[in-house]
Amino acid sequence: MKNLHKRILEEGKALSDTVLKVDSFLNHQVDPDLMYEMGTYFKNYFKNHKVTKIFTIESSGIAPTVMTAMQMNLPMVILKKQGSKILNSDVYQTTVHSYTKGSDYELTLSEKYINKEDNILIIDDFLANGEAALGAARLVEEAGAKVVGIGIVIEKSFQKGPQMLKDKGYDVYSLARISKLSKGTIEFL
Ligand code: 5GP
Image 1 (cartoon, rainbow, N blue to C red):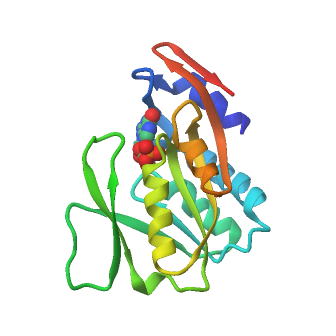
Image 2: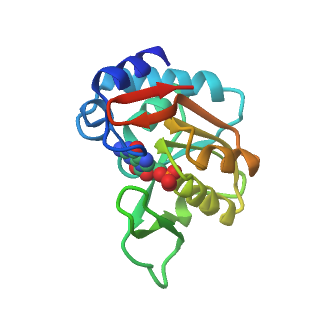
């Protein structure tokens, strides 16, 4: 996605060889026009995947996901990050290791918002080691539903997540694919 590449190059800051900061349009301040265009790209790629619902992970996945859901005319669900397990409750939960915080959280989905017939598209802001996307997929599959695609805004292709998800058979579509990151340098595939 040309406009996304442009914004990453103009405004992105490589904090290290592995972490990119895009606070000015995605992770802190949000550019709605850019989010809308992301939604158009995701819709065009996933329109024949028979998606019934779109899932995202709070909080930075929400903006691109709501724009996609709106354009695909589908409901969306925000998977919650809880600090600890909820006992005796009607939820699916799975432990995920946070890439940016370095700690674990419980990714949580209410049973009310999924059923066995659902075909789920998962959308998230970044793909690094794939823990978040794989955790979301585990919840979907635990509920007996199917993951029909994974949409990513910024994939760091040099980390292990992209290949790992593809090896597991998921259809991963990323709007920007970064091949190299270092202080002062951002390169795309
Ligand atoms: P993964 O689970 O694939 O290792 O990491 C994905 C999650 O970590 C995303 O949901 C995102 O919030 C965060 N993340 C991973 N890498 C980056 C990065 O370079 N920059 C930012 N801002 N977030 C990242």
